[in-house]
Length: 104
Image (cartoon, rainbow, N blue to C red; front, side, top):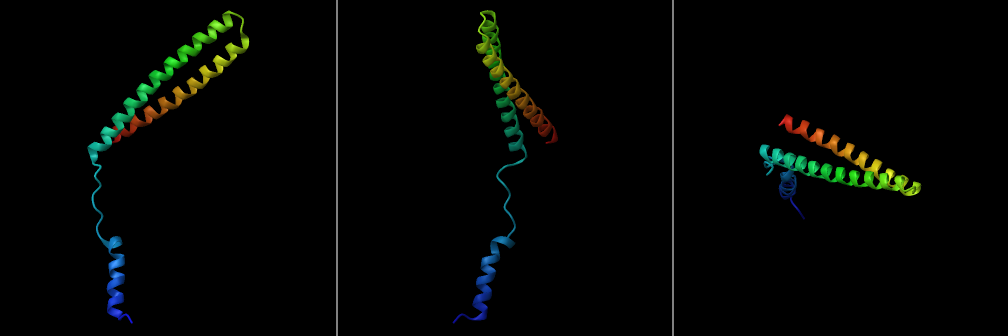
């Protein structure tokens, strides 16, 4: 049979992780800066890529309309507008990242 003291010691040992001071995170002040700058760079590259796709779809749409292929022109128009939405989302994300970077 367990004694009350051993039960108390076992309970105190079980609660130790909750009462011990928390260790400092490995991520510091400058790590956040670096991660935000990396994210900004990645977003800029993605926007550049999305603009290239949008230009490609705009050219294809123009060519299809010029040659009288209405449905193909319409399909490339949809793709172009989809790229416009992606560009707008990435621009908003980039703006949000810049605001977070200014905070630090």
